[in-house]
Image (cartoon, rainbow, N blue to C red; front, top):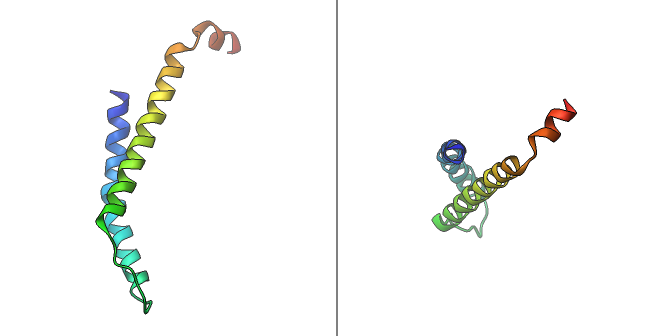
Length: 77
């Protein structure tokens, strides 16, 4: 449940960010005499990598919180 909330936020960020990055990079690269066209696979690979990093981070924090001793955190308070 926690992972799905962060996945939704990352997906919203990707939906907003990928078209902006596509537009800005196309405009930037068009000014060169020898330019490279934007490839869709670059953006897809980046989106998959970002999603994997977000899911692994949430999973790590969830496991760390599940294994933590609540007595230790109460003792520090």
